[in-house]
Amino acid sequence: MKTPFEQVLTDVTAKLQHPLLSFSDSEKLVIALTDTISDTLQMSLNARNQATLVVSGGSTPIPLFKKLAAYDLNWANVNVTLADERWVDENHDDSNTQLVKTQLLQKRASAARFIGLKTPAVDIDSGLDSCSTALKQLPQPFDVVILGMGNDGHTASLFPNTTTLKEGLSPATDKLCLSCQPPTAPHQRITLTYPLLSSAKQVILHIAGEDKLLTLQKALAAKNQADMPIRAFLQDPSINFVVYWSP
Ligand SMILES: O=C(O)C(O)[C@@H](O)[C@H](O)[C@H](O)COP(=O)(O)O
Image 1 (spheres, rainbow, N blue to C red):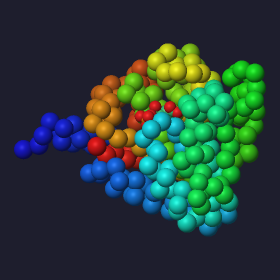
Image 2: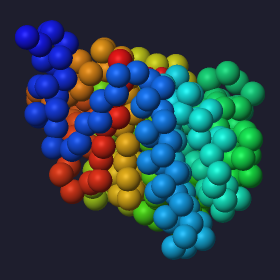
Image 3: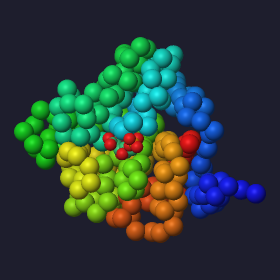
Protein backbone atom coordinates (compact mmCIF):
# COMPACT_ATOMS: atom_id res chain seq x y z
CA MET A 1 0.00 0.00 0.00
CA LYS A 2 1.56 3.31 -1.10
CA THR A 3 1.59 6.31 1.22
CA PRO A 4 -0.16 9.41 -0.18
CA PHE A 5 3.26 10.87 -0.79
CA GLU A 6 4.50 7.83 -2.72
CA GLN A 7 1.41 8.24 -4.87
CA VAL A 8 2.44 11.81 -5.67
CA LEU A 9 5.86 10.55 -6.72
CA THR A 10 4.28 7.87 -8.92
CA ASP A 11 1.90 10.41 -10.47
CA VAL A 12 4.70 12.91 -11.21
CA THR A 13 6.93 10.21 -12.69
CA ALA A 14 4.09 8.99 -14.94
CA LYS A 15 3.18 12.48 -16.19
CA LEU A 16 6.70 13.75 -16.78
CA GLN A 17 7.96 13.48 -20.36
CA HIS A 18 11.50 13.56 -18.96
CA PRO A 19 13.31 11.34 -16.45
CA LEU A 20 12.91 11.92 -12.73
CA LEU A 21 15.69 10.59 -10.52
CA SER A 22 14.53 10.36 -6.91
CA PHE A 23 16.91 9.78 -3.99
CA SER A 24 16.23 8.81 -0.39
CA ASP A 25 18.21 11.78 0.90
CA SER A 26 19.95 14.93 -0.21
CA GLU A 27 23.44 13.52 0.32
CA LYS A 28 22.85 10.66 -2.12
CA LEU A 29 21.37 13.07 -4.63
CA VAL A 30 24.36 15.40 -4.36
CA ILE A 31 26.82 12.54 -4.92
CA ALA A 32 24.96 11.36 -8.05
CA LEU A 33 24.45 14.88 -9.40
CA THR A 34 28.09 15.84 -8.83
CA ASP A 35 29.13 12.76 -10.82
CA THR A 36 26.76 13.63 -13.66
CA ILE A 37 27.89 17.25 -13.83
CA SER A 38 31.58 16.47 -13.64
CA ASP A 39 31.30 13.67 -16.26
CA THR A 40 29.54 16.04 -18.67
CA LEU A 41 32.06 18.83 -18.07
CA GLN A 42 34.93 16.34 -18.48
CA MET A 43 33.54 15.15 -21.83
CA SER A 44 33.50 18.70 -23.07
CA LEU A 45 37.00 19.36 -21.72
CA ASN A 46 38.21 16.25 -23.57
CA ALA A 47 36.52 17.29 -26.81
CA ARG A 48 37.03 21.08 -26.81
CA ASN A 49 39.37 21.82 -23.93
CA GLN A 50 36.71 23.99 -22.34
CA ALA A 51 33.33 23.57 -20.69
CA THR A 52 30.51 25.77 -19.40
CA LEU A 53 28.42 25.25 -16.30
CA VAL A 54 25.37 27.43 -15.55
CA VAL A 55 24.11 27.41 -11.97
CA SER A 56 21.18 28.88 -10.06
CA GLY A 57 20.93 30.70 -6.77
CA GLY A 58 18.71 29.79 -3.85
CA SER A 59 19.42 27.44 -0.96
CA THR A 60 18.99 24.05 -2.66
CA PRO A 61 22.31 24.00 -4.58
CA ILE A 62 24.58 24.88 -1.64
CA PRO A 63 25.52 21.26 -0.70
CA LEU A 64 26.02 20.53 -4.40
CA PHE A 65 28.32 23.54 -4.79
CA LYS A 66 30.41 22.45 -1.81
CA LYS A 67 30.84 18.93 -3.19
CA LEU A 68 31.54 20.06 -6.74
CA ALA A 69 34.19 22.54 -5.56
CA ALA A 70 36.47 19.69 -4.47
CA TYR A 71 36.10 17.73 -7.71
CA ASP A 72 39.20 16.96 -9.71
CA LEU A 73 38.57 18.74 -13.02
CA ASN A 74 40.68 21.12 -15.06
CA TRP A 75 38.65 23.98 -13.59
CA ALA A 76 40.88 26.60 -15.23
CA ASN A 77 39.15 25.69 -18.49
CA VAL A 78 35.62 25.69 -17.04
CA ASN A 79 33.38 28.74 -17.44
CA VAL A 80 30.81 29.20 -14.69
CA THR A 81 27.87 31.56 -15.04
CA LEU A 82 24.40 32.05 -13.57
CA ALA A 83 20.91 31.23 -14.79
CA ASP A 84 19.81 34.42 -13.04
CA GLU A 85 20.99 37.16 -10.76
CA ARG A 86 19.40 39.62 -8.40
CA TRP A 87 20.21 43.25 -9.27
CA VAL A 88 22.28 43.82 -6.13
CA ASP A 89 25.98 44.34 -5.57
CA GLU A 90 28.18 41.36 -4.89
CA ASN A 91 28.57 42.29 -1.21
CA HIS A 92 24.78 42.02 -0.69
CA ASP A 93 23.76 38.76 0.98
CA ASP A 94 21.14 38.14 -1.73
CA SER A 95 23.74 38.23 -4.51
CA ASN A 96 23.99 34.98 -6.44
CA THR A 97 27.52 35.99 -7.41
CA GLN A 98 28.44 36.07 -3.73
CA LEU A 99 26.79 32.68 -3.24
CA VAL A 100 28.68 31.09 -6.12
CA LYS A 101 32.00 32.65 -5.16
CA THR A 102 31.75 31.57 -1.52
CA GLN A 103 30.22 28.10 -2.02
CA LEU A 104 31.28 26.83 -5.46
CA LEU A 105 34.38 28.72 -6.55
CA GLN A 106 36.48 27.36 -3.69
CA LYS A 107 39.15 24.66 -3.44
CA ARG A 108 39.87 23.20 -6.90
CA ALA A 109 36.96 25.10 -8.47
CA SER A 110 38.53 28.44 -7.46
CA ALA A 111 40.45 28.20 -10.76
CA ALA A 112 37.24 28.39 -12.84
CA ARG A 113 36.42 31.45 -14.94
CA PHE A 114 33.32 33.14 -13.51
CA ILE A 115 31.11 35.33 -15.70
CA GLY A 116 28.61 37.27 -13.59
CA LEU A 117 25.38 38.86 -14.79
CA LYS A 118 25.34 41.96 -12.56
CA THR A 119 27.11 44.86 -14.23
CA PRO A 120 28.19 48.26 -12.90
CA ALA A 121 25.44 49.91 -15.03
CA VAL A 122 23.21 52.48 -13.27
CA ASP A 123 20.11 50.36 -13.70
CA ILE A 124 19.18 46.87 -14.76
CA ASP A 125 17.97 47.65 -18.27
CA SER A 126 21.17 49.56 -19.04
CA GLY A 127 23.10 46.49 -17.85
CA LEU A 128 21.46 44.03 -20.24
CA ASP A 129 23.62 44.84 -23.26
CA SER A 130 26.93 44.19 -21.55
CA CYS A 131 25.47 41.12 -19.88
CA SER A 132 24.42 39.82 -23.27
CA THR A 133 27.87 40.58 -24.73
CA ALA A 134 29.51 38.59 -21.93
CA LEU A 135 27.15 35.65 -22.50
CA LYS A 136 27.86 35.67 -26.26
CA GLN A 137 31.52 35.04 -25.51
CA LEU A 138 30.68 31.72 -23.91
CA PRO A 139 30.68 28.61 -26.10
CA GLN A 140 27.14 27.51 -26.87
CA PRO A 141 25.23 25.34 -26.35
CA PHE A 142 26.18 25.33 -22.67
CA ASP A 143 27.23 21.95 -21.30
CA VAL A 144 25.21 21.87 -18.10
CA VAL A 145 22.45 24.13 -16.76
CA ILE A 146 21.29 23.57 -13.17
CA LEU A 147 17.89 25.07 -12.43
CA GLY A 148 15.92 25.41 -9.21
CA MET A 149 12.19 25.98 -8.88
CA GLY A 150 10.09 28.08 -6.54
CA ASN A 151 6.72 26.94 -5.25
CA ASP A 152 5.07 29.55 -7.50
CA GLY A 153 6.49 27.67 -10.51
CA HIS A 154 9.29 30.13 -11.32
CA THR A 155 12.63 28.87 -12.51
CA ALA A 156 15.77 30.96 -13.03
CA SER A 157 14.12 34.41 -12.80
CA LEU A 158 11.30 33.52 -15.16
CA PHE A 159 8.56 34.51 -12.70
CA PRO A 160 4.82 33.94 -13.25
CA ASN A 161 2.84 36.65 -14.98
CA THR A 162 5.63 39.24 -15.18
CA THR A 163 5.84 41.76 -18.01
CA THR A 164 8.97 40.29 -19.61
CA LEU A 165 7.93 36.64 -19.22
CA LYS A 166 6.34 36.23 -22.66
CA GLU A 167 9.56 37.22 -24.36
CA GLY A 168 11.64 35.25 -21.86
CA LEU A 169 9.77 32.05 -22.71
CA SER A 170 9.44 32.67 -26.44
CA PRO A 171 11.35 30.10 -28.53
CA ALA A 172 11.68 32.86 -31.12
CA THR A 173 13.41 35.46 -28.94
CA ASP A 174 16.93 36.41 -29.93
CA LYS A 175 17.55 37.88 -26.46
CA LEU A 176 19.98 35.98 -24.25
CA CYS A 177 18.93 37.75 -21.06
CA LEU A 178 16.10 39.94 -19.81
CA SER A 179 15.17 41.93 -16.73
CA CYS A 180 12.37 40.84 -14.44
CA GLN A 181 10.56 42.50 -11.56
CA PRO A 182 9.05 39.64 -9.55
CA PRO A 183 5.96 40.67 -7.59
CA THR A 184 6.55 37.92 -5.03
CA ALA A 185 10.32 38.07 -4.42
CA PRO A 186 12.77 40.84 -3.54
CA HIS A 187 14.97 42.66 -6.07
CA GLN A 188 14.84 43.16 -9.79
CA ARG A 189 16.49 40.22 -11.55
CA ILE A 190 18.40 39.39 -14.70
CA THR A 191 17.46 36.04 -16.14
CA LEU A 192 18.74 34.02 -19.04
CA THR A 193 15.94 33.34 -21.51
CA TYR A 194 14.25 30.01 -22.14
CA PRO A 195 15.91 29.32 -25.54
CA LEU A 196 19.37 29.87 -24.10
CA LEU A 197 18.79 27.80 -20.95
CA SER A 198 16.90 25.00 -22.64
CA SER A 199 19.38 24.55 -25.48
CA ALA A 200 22.05 23.28 -23.06
CA LYS A 201 23.37 19.76 -23.65
CA GLN A 202 22.04 18.84 -20.22
CA VAL A 203 19.39 20.77 -18.27
CA ILE A 204 18.90 19.62 -14.70
CA LEU A 205 16.09 20.66 -12.40
CA HIS A 206 17.42 20.18 -8.86
CA ILE A 207 14.68 20.25 -6.24
CA ALA A 208 14.35 19.05 -2.66
CA GLY A 209 11.42 18.60 -0.32
CA GLU A 210 7.86 17.31 -0.55
CA ASP A 211 6.56 20.82 -1.28
CA LYS A 212 8.63 20.99 -4.47
CA LEU A 213 7.30 17.63 -5.64
CA LEU A 214 3.75 18.86 -5.06
CA THR A 215 4.61 22.00 -7.05
CA LEU A 216 5.89 19.81 -9.87
CA GLN A 217 2.64 17.79 -9.72
CA LYS A 218 0.65 21.03 -10.00
CA ALA A 219 2.81 22.17 -12.92
CA LEU A 220 2.14 18.90 -14.73
CA ALA A 221 -1.61 19.12 -14.19
CA ALA A 222 -2.23 22.13 -16.48
CA LYS A 223 -0.71 23.90 -19.47
CA ASN A 224 -0.53 27.68 -18.90
CA GLN A 225 3.17 28.63 -18.92
CA ALA A 226 2.54 32.21 -17.77
CA ASP A 227 1.11 30.86 -14.51
CA MET A 228 4.01 28.46 -13.93
CA PRO A 229 7.04 29.14 -16.16
CA ILE A 230 8.67 25.80 -15.27
CA ARG A 231 6.02 24.33 -17.61
CA ALA A 232 8.00 25.59 -20.59
CA PHE A 233 10.70 23.03 -19.75
CA LEU A 234 8.26 20.29 -18.72
CA GLN A 235 6.30 20.60 -21.96
CA ASP A 236 9.27 20.55 -24.34
CA PRO A 237 10.12 16.97 -25.36
CA SER A 238 13.02 18.15 -27.51
CA ILE A 239 15.24 19.25 -24.62
CA ASN A 240 17.63 17.12 -22.60
CA PHE A 241 15.95 17.74 -19.23
CA VAL A 242 16.23 15.63 -16.06
CA VAL A 243 14.67 16.18 -12.64
CA TYR A 244 16.73 15.33 -9.54
CA TRP A 245 14.60 15.17 -6.39
CA SER A 246 15.16 14.18 -2.78
CA PRO A 247 12.97 14.70 0.30
O1 LIG B 1 18.39 33.10 -7.63
C1 LIG B 1 17.34 32.53 -7.51
O2 LIG B 1 16.49 32.84 -6.67
C2 LIG B 1 17.03 31.41 -8.42
O3 LIG B 1 17.90 31.02 -9.33
C3 LIG B 1 15.71 30.74 -8.31
O4 LIG B 1 15.14 30.35 -9.52
C4 LIG B 1 15.86 29.53 -7.36
O5 LIG B 1 16.51 28.49 -8.01
C5 LIG B 1 14.50 29.09 -6.86
O6 LIG B 1 13.85 30.18 -6.25
C6 LIG B 1 14.60 27.96 -5.86
O7 LIG B 1 15.21 28.44 -4.70
P1 LIG B 1 15.49 27.49 -3.46
O8 LIG B 1 16.55 26.55 -3.86
O9 LIG B 1 15.97 28.44 -2.37
O10 LIG B 1 14.21 26.83 -3.12
